[in-house]
Length: 88
Image 1 (tube, rainbow, N blue to C red):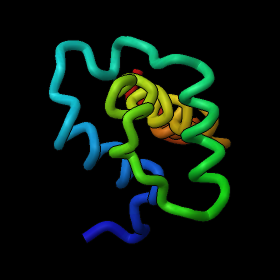
Image 2: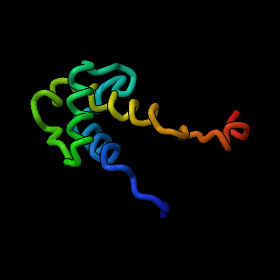
Image 3: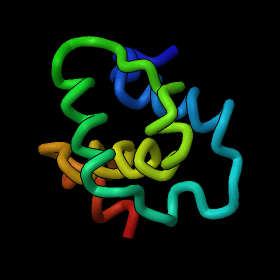
Image 4: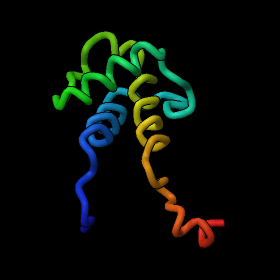
């Protein structure tokens, strides 16, 4: 198996999207910025937010957007600098 556990933010968001968000372009469209920040703040507060709140169900794209934001802000990209040559 994998050596390191999946971060809670990714686990929660992807499970939620698989359950509620199988819509066209789920990871392509952006959510409402204020909702993304609210959701991010809830994860930062060391709690697992209730993603079934109306605010998130109605703006499911903010959940996908938070996933993308997480990957963008990694100190070393998912396709790491060390392996970049092999990928390209």
